[in-house]
Image (cartoon, rainbow, N blue to C red; front, side, top):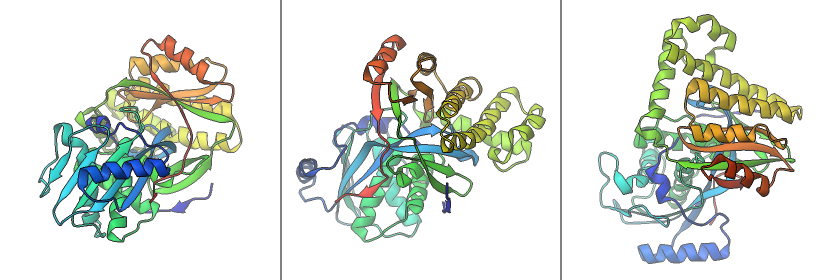
Length: 404
């Protein structure tokens, strides 16, 4: 794994606004999308850009704690079409619903209700200014997505990166993948209000078919890790709503920062498991559980990379399931529906490991399986779960890019 040093999240109402239909941007899809754009804005789109969602393979809540994460860009995407508009004019629409947004001047605060989804692209436009990068004076933007709502697959980061690429193209600017990831994170932290780390944007920016994206978040440093060809990723989406911006995500972030301060480190990932164990009694029991999860999860990421490198899929799978149990019992960001799915998947002989993916508090379980786990097996698991989760067989895909 050869690293290159680089510089260097999530919310719900927005997901409902981005349910729609283009995964591969072929000629007919582009033509249809163009027609929709013309209908809404009375001009042709000047640029198309797309960015993938991501699966958090392992590394739950480690990114903002300075730890390591493994993500995978997936073949479910957000696609945007854009064109320049008169200065100070911002017109945004989604094919999947959500209120259309027509602004002659940007509001000082955040949009709310059914228009809240537009905080992401508008936050990107503002962030381009913060980063002293070129941006159009105004823009028309149409958004389409085939990312499932609320599955923890980071439709928010995908929208941010697709928007950034489109607006930069309109203004004649470019960004490297690491700069693109940093821009998206800044937008989500500053203009949406989610204190996310770099996992979502970094994975969407650096994704490559057949590879996981390893991120050392202290740099951050991004590297690609091959995923064995005889494995498959499955998502079981419980469709439980999880509004991360509404408090639970921020609470966990605050608990982690409190633990680091008491233990005298900048970030929890600065501690080894042994160092943490020697000081754990300094912490309130609840705060200690949160910190223990982070420190041990950071170590599990390194162990998973090593297991994949030596071809030990059984060990990698055990680490994935151990990650879920830590989220369940220590970080307490799982739910009974997620736990039930992992309980059903874990003993299946073709399942290597399973864990919640994303911020938690709802959403989806990811399973890593062998070749002999197929749709029929997935449907049996889903039926036994009782909640009838949505099943998605994913492919690991390339990262964000301009597509036309």
